[in-house]
Length: 135
Image (cartoon, rainbow, N blue to C red; front, side, top):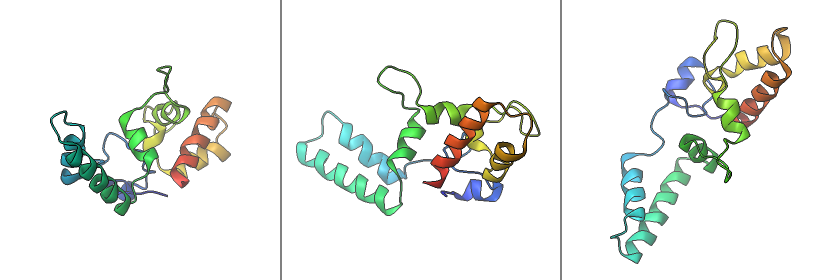
């Protein structure tokens, strides 16, 4: 599972919640901006892209992390199944109102296998969030 320092203390699955740290380092953000700057020369664009991807790979950042953090949608404009599942609010219990993507994996597994109140749709969305966290 992926954990960052903030969520490790909480035992949360990291799927970019509002309290998660920044996705890009300061240097990566500069490389990103340079690569998309219309005034940048072709060599600068190429070099910034290479350096950005090398840095992201060194930190083991996955494409899914960036896509999820961006709130990306499908071409039709709808949220992806993962985005919908991650943003779903817990409808009951001690975590009522919190997004599924911000809840501890142990709690999500308890709801999935032990709770009598979880709907089929909620269980499916929990499965999606847990599967994404295990990749």
